[in-house]
Image 1 (cartoon, rainbow, N blue to C red):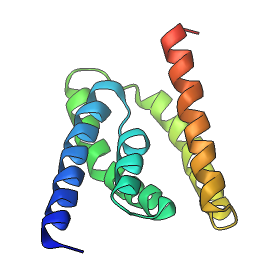
Image 2: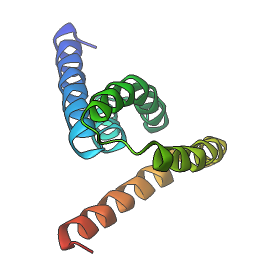
Image 3: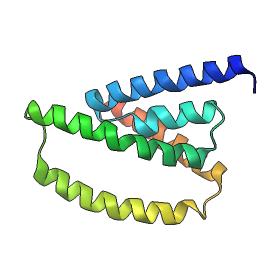
Image 4: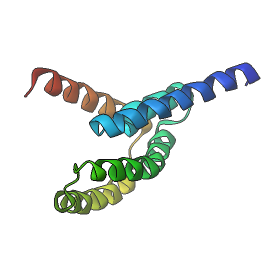
Length: 124
């Protein structure tokens, strides 16, 4: 790969990280919605993009939680309930990802994004 192209891809990923950080703190989104499509655009395989996005969630979430806690915006009881289900679900999801073809995962991701966008747009 040409050095110029590599620099452009690094810039895209850096700006994507910045956007994901802002959106994660502002709206609670970013990892999957922003980073996965950007990484796949840059040539990262879909499953690797998903795993990498999850790794980025750790420091992003930690910073967001600290700052939101300082603003009084964290309900730890609800967070504990959600985290319990999310940890179990993440474990099941990782077991499934090894068995599901990339193309099907991409299509499921796209459908999820479209359905979510429609629900948000229509307010339902």
